[in-house]
Image (cartoon, rainbow, N blue to C red; front, side):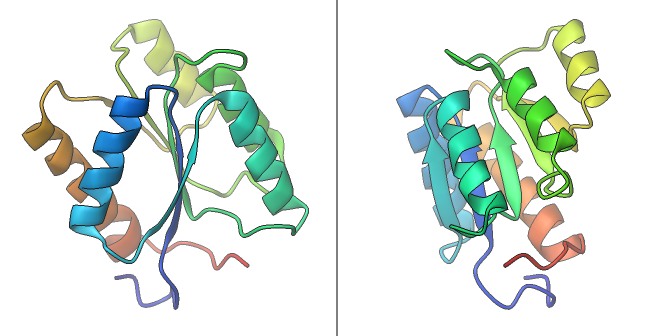
Length: 147
């Protein structure tokens, strides 16, 4: 674990598909039993959670895993809101989505996504992706301390 984080890392998963959310949760907890995972079922819920964090009413996540194709407020809109907020913009946002569409990739990076990953089609590959995310962001990269 990154020696700079003195508590379990906090991850916000923004995913409207309950089965995908369950799979990501299982993979995360196989990799990192001490991670604190919050799941937002859509973009509107996610922005509410993040607003509470920006206002100091709840802890901010150390990392956001963001699906793009969601009802109400889509992932691109959520990403834009995160990156325009002074309180939230330093949070790494990894787009984890089923879309491999070049326009989605380009738009996500234009909106300052930290990474864009197409969800693998099987559980073993998803586990490998989650393991790589956890290793990089919580063992290799230096993240800012969050309250």
